[in-house]
Length: 515
Image (tube, rainbow, N blue to C red; front, side, top):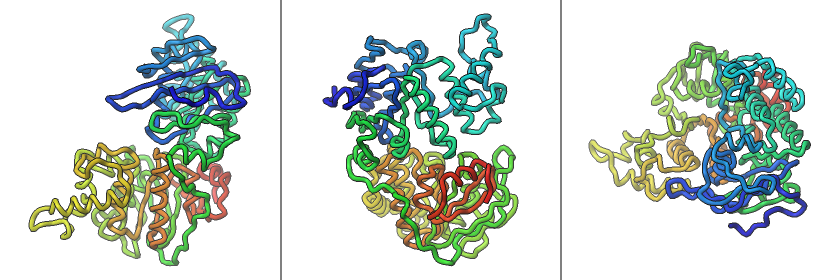
């Protein structure tokens, strides 16, 4: 057991108590004798880096995993939870980070799945719809029971998941990274729902690594690091800097929004009237036009699925355009191959680290020279010079603080944050003139995020033109000199980063307003 107090000063008795929870996976200690108290009438933030054990702990509470040791009490009584059904029977519900909906069914049909019916196997959908409408009104979760899920926005789908959970009338609701795909307005609505639920005496647990969210909505925060509880605090008694340091184990310089570049007048990347279809043949980019100057970060803000991925693929030579033109330093490179773009100074940090960024079965050293195999510095006559490749990789591993036992280890052995550092090292070594960075810190903890953003700022100072595509609006606001808002493949407007208003951005990326 840890030696921390079971509850911080001023807290009421817990609804749910987890004591000494330990869980191992193949020798990895995911949860190490964790104590956690969850109270009714409060929003409890479970904060930590990726791999800290947050989701594992809540999956144990929800019955998806069995703890190796420890106990759970609910209302003071020891309880055994062997499955999600057990958790639901004990009034615990969980909304997972990745939605679990059937796209071809209606909202009511999705909510009714698994419910016990009076006339089995037939379900009374009319009564389900009545209750959905009542919950929607009670908690401000506007959604039509008759709507087909495939036609709903991401924010609406999340509301369906929450209504699915609320339909079982839980006393405790767990939300895993709930804001990752929402607009600012949708996040505000989610926070209002969480507060409303807590005001009824129910417990809400939010799993997150986003410090602003913790400060904005939670009453209590528990910080996990490497499977252990390192702090349990009342939110009003702490601050983002302290929480960041507790998460990482060292002081972290959080972005405060003052980081701006001094762009030159010279255009490095010009995108003119570019249109392209996605893999389903639907128009994904509709006459997209913008310019990125040398020494500038142009942020592209938008809810996931509005053409950002296709834009990045077009600029990396991975997708053909239907029309329009792309110029890099004045050279026409429309529909050029990835190799041609690299040769003309374009670097690409892909969204998919595993599928596109690295070859997982290759060694770290091989990955770091993958695009330099014909470089004479790494060749010995007709073969690759293994010694020079090894020396090069060792230097980059040290420079980029990539945590690995050996550069000869397969790339798949790296954590997500270290994979991203390896991709960054590989791309930046070529000294690109234009850098397309797609979701560069997505899913990363505070420490890795701090490192990656510092590297992006360093590249901007070097005069690199950076197109930053991110669904994290805090990241966009803190780093961008200008912000392009995208909705359904259209640029709704481009705003100056220094004076951009979060509410205005939210309206534009939600398709409600155009500049």
